[in-house]
Structures are given as structure tokens and as C-alpha cells.
Length: 429
Ligand SMILES: Cc1cc2nc3c(=O)[nH]c(=O)nc-3n(C[C@H](O)[C@H](O)[C@H](O)COP(=O)(O)OP(=O)(O)OC[C@H]3O[C@@H](n4cnc5c(N)ncnc54)[C@H](O)[C@@H]3O)c2cc1C
Image (cartoon, protein in one colour):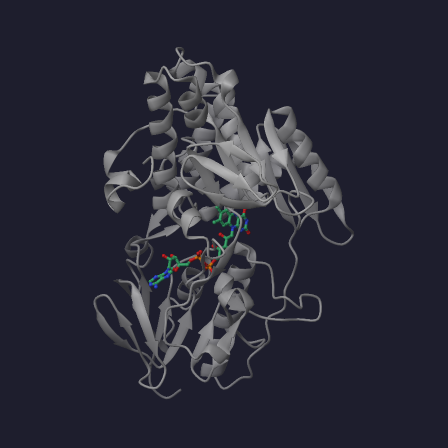
């Protein structure tokens, strides 16, 4: 590489940001990091924003601050509309950007499996904005319930259905159960929260299907003890904003359905369909290369291996490690050395259900932890991974405060975050 190459990275999530940071000030590259948001968001703690435990700013970090002193990295806040491999450029909401190398790290989007009603009425939780919209709707419903005299309407406004028994669904329903038990009755003494039901619906036979049998069973028992109604082998067929219709013909009255049951790759248009694998993920080789000068990383990349014939799990650790490997490969290639393949290292999986309740599976030799030690590990790992010293301190103080008081106090209503305002209104919203 005789002269500096222009590397364009789409997406400043776990993968894109790690890559840009690892190549920061590298003399061989000029980097343009493009994201539609001007901040990096820490998705693993979105559920705490949605349940009024943390403020959105505690888990978001401005991109320009990270690269303030960078000699080679520039930020573009823009939505990428299209990739044009033949012209070696991307089309964005602020104009075209040419590249020598392109890395697609646009993550994943919520998958409603083609159900337009669910997409319209259910709430996703993949971004900070969506977590705040969810919090707004939750509080708005309870406010409405506090004004209603109709018992059926009160039931529907208080009931919450979480669809998807993966880590996000587990963590969210656990946090909602804690809210129901403590801070909501303190804030709304006029309402009877015994009438509020939190349902967790999972299509397969167990929750936390990617974890060990022990962790799955334990998390279910934690949730049930906390009052969550857990239903496995239960498929949602439809939702009209008022009732959730299940595949077996029964239904649940609920004005708030949270959809955490599926994700799919989120690549901008322009790549040939031959590059796509099931789940709309971009097929990459062991070097995260799509073709020629184009690479893909993280949730949106599909890399097969013998142990993972359906691609690696869509986890932050995979996104970060792939980015580290690719940064090393760019440096190696720049100095004329061979690139190294990415190798997946299972660092373990974990999920928390609530105060002193979590499950951790550690790899070979397989080992499970639960209860307080698992909860402590979960908190330490998440604090460590969170970006920014200030954010870590604030989150830590918040957690200590909540541990001592059980108070979920960020129950603020912001009208501009209401989906009704943004979408022109629909259904009961
Ligand atoms: C609620 C939740 C909880 C999770 N909990 C855990 C956990 O506990 N542990 C764990 O390992 N993993 C967890 N994950 C998964 C983890 O967050 C993902 O694996 C990880 O974020 C993937 O990183 P990524 O860089 O591929 O994508 P992301 O981090 O999603 O980043 C994608 C970036 O691309 C940007 N972008 C997308 N499209 C465009 C476009 N067209 N133009 C411009 N910018 C664009 C987005 O704004 C975003 O910044 C969780 C995910 C969610 C949603």
C-alpha cells in the first residue's frame, strides 16, 4: 500500500467502532466512520433504559468525542442508502462517499417475520430511541389506567406481553416484574397492581434456548417466582393493538406488546443477492471478506464454521473480536504480511433476571453459575464493557442506589417520544 487508503466503515456499533479505534492514527489509512446516530449505543443495557432504571445518556457515547484527537478518522452522521460496488462508493443521506475499502457493520434489525400488524403495533427494543419509546408507552398506559373506571380497559392497559424468551425477553420481563412490585405501586397508590400481569411468551420449548438446560430452568423459575407468567411452546399469531392472538386460538388483552422474538441482517441496498445467507446476513469468508475490497462484521455478517454451520451467534463479543481480527489484518496487509482467519472463542453466556438473580454458562470445562455470584459477574462484565469512565461511574452509582432503595425513578414522559405523535396515530395509540 504505497499511499494512504480510504477505509469507509458503515456502523459505529460494537464492530465498526472497535475497528475504527484499532486503526486510529494508523499511517496507512484515512477512515470515514458513518453512522445514522451521532453516538455509540450499548444495547445490552437498553432494557434498563426501557424500565426507567438508567438514563439513555448513561449507555450512549458521542462518536466525535471518541475521535477528538484522531489524525486519520472522520465521522459522518448519515444514513447509508445504497452501496455501489462497481463505482466503489456509498450513497448516503448527505451525499456519496468513495472508498478504497468498505466495511459493513450495520448490525441487525428487528424481524417480525412479515407480520405487518406486529410491526405496526408491537414495540421493538433495538436502539436507544426504541427503548425510550417503550418506556414512554409503558408510563402512558399506566397513567391512562389510573384515570380509567372500566375494569377491562384497566386490565388491558396494565398487562404487558413480552414475546421472545432470549436474554432480552428474560431481562426485560424480570425488570418489569420488579417495577410492578416496588416503584409502580409507590407512584400509583390508586391502582391495584395485583391485577397487572406480565407474560413472557416463547415459541420453543425453553427460555434461554442458547444456554445450558440448568440456566434455562433456573431463569424460568426465577421469573415465575417474581410473578411473571412464562409460556413456552407458545406462538403469537397476530396483534391488533388490544389483544394478542395466539396460534392455539386463545388471546391475551394487552395494550403493550414488546417484540424481542427475532432479528435479521440490516445491510443497505446495493449488494448482489448472491452475497446473502438466511436471516439476511452477508456471507463472509474467514477473513470477514465479502468480495474484493468489501468486508462485513458483527451481527450482519454470516461466517460458517464446522461447529457453527448456521453462522456464529449474534453477540457483542463476536462483533468486537471480528473487528479486532480485521484491524490486525489491515495492518498486516499494509506491511505485506498474510491475513489471519477469524477464530471464534466462546467466552461464555449470561443473562440477568433481577436483583441477585442471574445465570452464567462458562465454556470448557462447562460450568454454570447462578444467583448472587452470577449476578455480580454479569454486573462487572457489563460495567467493564460500557464505554466511557463517566458512564461507568454513573451506572455503578445508579445500581448501588437501586440496590439500596429498589427505586426505578426515571419514569419521565416525553410527548415527542410517543409513537403516536411520530406515526400519525394508529390503533389505540
Ligand atoms: C436489547 C439487546 C440486548 C443485548 N444484550 C447482549 C448481551 O448481553 N451480550 C451480548 O454479547 N450481546 C448482546 N446483544 C447483542 C449485541 O448488542 C450485538 O451482537 C452487537 O450490538 C452487534 O454489533 P454490531 O456492531 O454488529 O451491530 P450494532 O452494535 O447493532 O451496530 C450497528 C450500527 O450501525 C448503524 N447503522 C445501521 N444501519 C445503518 C445505515 N443504513 N446507515 C448508517 N448507520 C447504520 C447503527 O446506528 C448502529 O450504530 C444485545 C442486543 C440487544 C438488541
